[in-house]
Every structure is written in C-alpha cells, then in structure tokens.
Image (cartoon, rainbow, N blue to C red; front, side, top):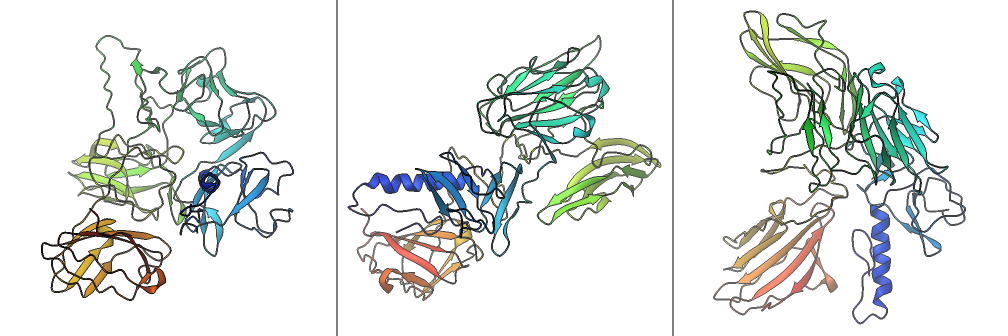
Length: 506
C-alpha cells in the first residue's frame, strides 16, 4: 500500500525487512524536496547518486523514455521515477527559478515566487554596469572563480547578487579592487551550491555585502553601516543575528537606526539615503514633482498573472491633506486621502498645505531573491490557499474546534481546524462537512467523538463518505467513551475517504 498523496510506500503489519520500505520512502521524499538540476537536459550518461531531474517531453534515453514530466532520481545504481503532483513547486538549478506542476500544462514558471534576471559566469569575472539588478550564477565546475568588484566610486549605485550555481568542491571568491573595501571582510568565499551574497555599491568608495556567504564569510560577521546610510539584513535562520556598528560621526550629528517592527509587516531590506544602493522603481521623479503633482518613476508589479511594466507618470494630490499613493496588481497607480488599501502596494505618503508638498515619506518595500522579511508575527497570517514551499517547522499547533449537534444535525466547518472534538449528547441523523479545500487540493479532518454521560448515541454517516469494505463503524455506546475517525477528500468534498483510527480509547 502507498500513501494517497505522495504515493510513499507504507510498512505493512508483520512485514519483514521494514527498513527497505522505510528507506525507499525517505529516498522519494528526498527527491520531491530536492533542488532539480534541469528540466531540459537529456538523460545523463554517467549520473551521480542523488542526481534529480525533471524528465523533458519526448525524452529518448534508455531509462527516461516514457517518463515525460516525471521527477527522475538516481540512486542505488538505477533511476527511480515519481509522477508529479499538481501544485508541486521545485527549484530548477540551471534556470535559477522555481517551476510548478499544473495539470494540463506541465511544468510552468512559479510566478508566486519572484526572481531576478540572471547572468551565467564560469571564469574569473569583473562586475559590469550592465550587471545592475542581476543574479550572477557562478559555475565553478572547471575550478575556483574570482568575481572582482570595480571601484565602487565609478559605478554609482549598483546592486548585484552572486550565487554559486554548481555542486563541486570549488569556491567563489568575491573580492574588491585595491582601493575599495567590502564591508564584510577583505574578501568573502561562497562554498556551497545555492549559497550567495548581495553586493551593494554606496556610490562612494565602498561595497557592502548583505547576507549569505559561505565558510569564510558566514552570517554573523560584523557589518559596519556607513554614515548617512540605513542598511538592514535579516537571515533565513532567525537564530542568526547580524551585529553592526555606526561610523563617520561628526560633532552635533545624530543618526537614528529604526529596526523592523514586530507586527508582521514587510521590513525594507535596503534604502540608502545617500543615493547609493537605493532602488528606483516607483521612486519620486523630481522632474515631474511640483505643487500638487507627484511624479513617479517607472516600475513593475509581479503577481500570479505575470509581470506588469508600469511607465513613469504622475498623480494629482489633494491640498491640505495627507495623500497615500499606491499601486495595485494591474499596475494602476492611484492616490487617496484615507490610508493605504489592503491588497495594494504602498508607494508614498505625501502631506500638502496651501498648494505645496510639505512632507514626503517613501513607503516602498523591497524584496530580494523572492524573500519577504518578517521581524515576527503577532496576528494571523492568511495565505489564501497559496503554496508554502519547503518550510522547516520547529513547532506548530492546530486549531481544534468543538462543534455541537443540534436537532439531530452536526455541522463541521473543515476550514476552522483539522481536529474537531464532538460531544454526542443526541443521535446525529445529518452530518455536514462544510468548507473543504477546492477540488485538486486535499482536506483532512479528524473527528474525536465523545459519548455523553448517557451514551448510546449514534451517527448516520452521509453517502459521500467511503469506508473500507463499504461498512461504516458502529460507535462505542459506553457512556463517556471516545472513538476517533479520520477522513480526507481531494475533490472538494464530493467524496470523503474515512477510516477508524481508534475506538473506545481509554
């Protein structure tokens, strides 16, 4: 037998050599959660153990033929294939982007996970102006590679991400020229595939390395902040904190460092007030901003529907008011006087008086590498049934509702929690399982059924529930006894598959 979603092999009762089935399931999980080397490459002639690919359409290799779109995993001297699951998202290394499997379409770009333009590098390389906003994918399979940074003062504001793209023992060394300083250390090494660093020029004589790094430049290295600059970085691992220091103070100067709040709002990753390293999308356009007209530079908006490029333009501000400038998912830039709108991206908050702009505050937030940085959540975080890919959970809990029957009817809201405890104080003749996930997604529900002090209560199960052998269980009738039933559906509740997890639990 196998599991219903991932088709993982299950250990059977009294099965010999249980470790074989267990290890097979671990291997399959490893492949489904791994980074995929390619979805276009032909079958490798000499694969290595642990190699994972997506089999391209029309593959003709001896092992791959007939396995289009399946995930191919090489181990134990042979290829193993796993059919894709709708909604499964994986990272493709040679494309440096995520893809998601969609029924009827195959593997398509996962637009829910933003990406930056890329440039491939396989030999020693000096960063160029044209690399602005790019991710340099460095292939070190032919030997170590040094990425050199030109004089920061000659590059103005320049931001480049550098990522090691190959799996080998060679490192990427990121090093400044002789006149500059990388404010991380004199040089940093990136040793592991998928690791990287974000390099920002402050437009003066310094480069700043933000996050990432490898064995020679791991998280936690002191990162000085330049005078007149606010630059923050947050690690993927909340246990790693970044130390910093402020420099360049002169008499009677004041510098304020504001950390991201803990309300769950997006924290700005980088905004350099001196001009270097700032991002220009939807920034104020000084050439068109005047009086009650606020001008903005061109930008782009990414959503599940794709990327919308928005040209530069202007909005008209209300006088003697606080104006909130924002952009929606269609790229429409608007202004109102009541506050920023849920579901839209804040751009600017502008105060006006007597026909002039008296205060203007940048409200944009920057995402780098598809990551949104949270300082902590103190309220619910709705995901609207969108995929959450490869999380590592330290601890979690589930909401457990306690619906009660009334007049013979028991309504259970599946969306309210996946483990529901029901005290049976009457016979249930109508059971409604409401609000499961839509068809194509799985909903599971565990019912903890507790007899009241009288006992003998029963449930008439609806025909939409399928039982093993077609026979529903008979509930334990003893007063205060506990039975547990587990159900799941993949078609929006048309059919529920159910089994008895335990009876007369004591």
